[in-house]
Image (cartoon, rainbow, N blue to C red; front, side, top):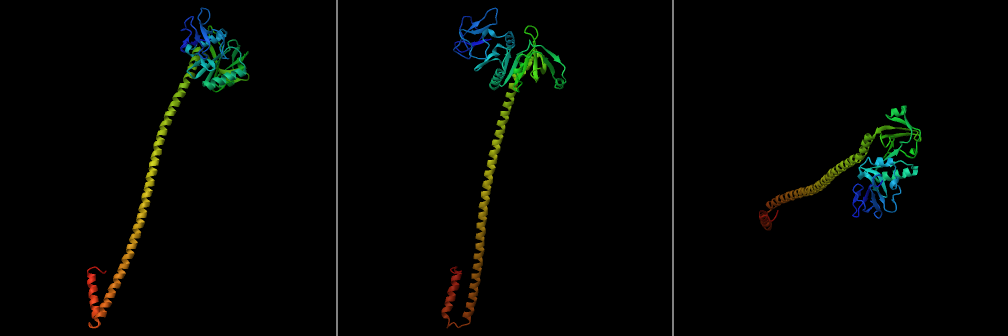
Length: 330
């Protein structure tokens, strides 16, 4: 039952805030006019001024069952009939869990279509199926006890067989009555074609507590994801610093290698120069030795002959000695 619409300014207006006689608009299809119905007999709601809802899954205006109305009323009005284009979730709680309330028969194809749609769009889905008219009894089952569960045998299964248990989907069978007792069977395991159901039976407070856990599960996952992203960013910063340090070390190693190569080349050049100097020194010593030997032989030659015969050579020897003293000849 539609409990929200938009005013002419596009603001969301809930049925308990609507003014009688004012025209409102569909909150998903803005060209469809709606008027508030605020009588004393039926539940307050918006109805279309003309035409009908374009959501092909919708329960049109007054066709919603008492079971559906009662189950929706368990949740805040702000969480009911929430657009998930092009459909509306019966209840969207916590922004991450859709609750679909089903009283009438759905084919296997319709169940599969809706399940896939909400899981892909929102993330998780809870089916609340009306089993209040289905006879069942609690039976002893050793296999169920081993699993820590209870076993429920249904004599009439209505449309249960068209539903399947999936990882991101929860199924609750409503087995109370809308006036006095609100009880649910949380389906955790199905035998055959729903001939027997393993699960836990819970009253309304426990059911709502479980829904709150599902609602907050998204927050926990979000917190974990934020923490993971923070740790990842911190790890990336550390990795970046380590990379920069490694690059700096590589640059220093490269510079040190270049310096070592330069010193090796310099050492090689110095060694070569030293070797050449040694060779030149040896040659100089050999020349000095040969010169001294020549001078000794020359002096002996001069002394062994008369000055008259070798007068010119005497002066040549004297001139040579003088030149040596002055450093002109080495």
